[in-house]
Image 1: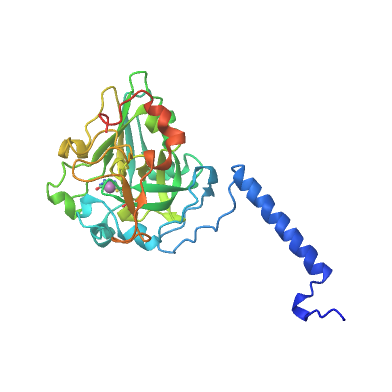
Image 2: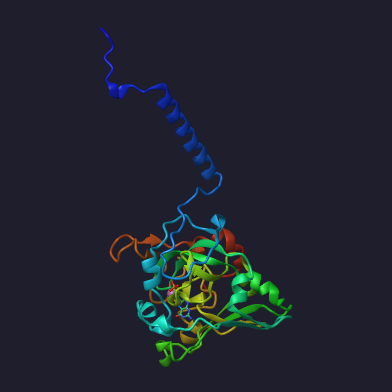
Length: 318
Ligand SMILES: Nc1nc2c(c(=O)[nH]1)N[C@H]1C(S)=C(S)[C@@H](COP(=O)(O)O)O[C@H]1N2
Ligand SMILES: [Mo]
């Protein structure tokens, strides 16, 4: 009997070899992935809403998780100076003035100084870093920030031996911020970090997101981003950095000390007094009723930051 081979079964040698080459490439890529080398990811497409802000991607400090849509990142916000509703910042931050802008650096430093935004933009190389952001309210996002480590700025001010903490302050513009006309919080919004937290390479001074300068509702023209802590630690629209010997007062501790602490490290095992922190809802992916995802200790950055809290009781230092 003659061999009956249908045309579809024919694999010419050239195609066969190509296939082999592709398989070899794929397994090489997998091996690299396993060894910790990040596969290339599609570049973030700037949405064309704001001036572009060039940067160099930093894959070593970026999660490979799906980024949250620009739409959600810029329309679902917490920025109480513009109102307490999630859509208030996008609706009301349009008149906020981001020029001229200065940041004052003071307190326990050898070189107190006031820097203009143009100098701050040039102070160090801009990197794109895709970080998880976990709000204390139980939702999270994945945001492609642009900025450089806050440590770059701190080093220039030369903190003294007495500098144990760093306090941050947000701008107050009574005429453009409808939220500050009401005493929802004690304005200006203030936050703080321990010195080693502020100097940690993950702590970012951010000027942009999604390839462009920060939209006002996300904290233009510059903000802090501390990815292993609840979002409220990451102050927006920064105007003052003060180095102190004592732990500085912070807005949410002043407002409800039993509910919000100075450390505010993301921790699934330490519930908020009124709700669990074990799970979270990823904006744009998890619905109100669809399965939530498990919250990670230090928001998934434990390898990098757990050593900062060695020997500390995370339940009392919440
Ligand atoms: N000045 C100021 N900074 C702030 C806030 C605020 O109300 N005012 N909200 C914080 C909270 S609770 C969160 S979750 C993040 C939200 O940042 P995003 O809107 O850019 O996602 O900003 C933080 N920074
Ligand atoms: Mo938050």
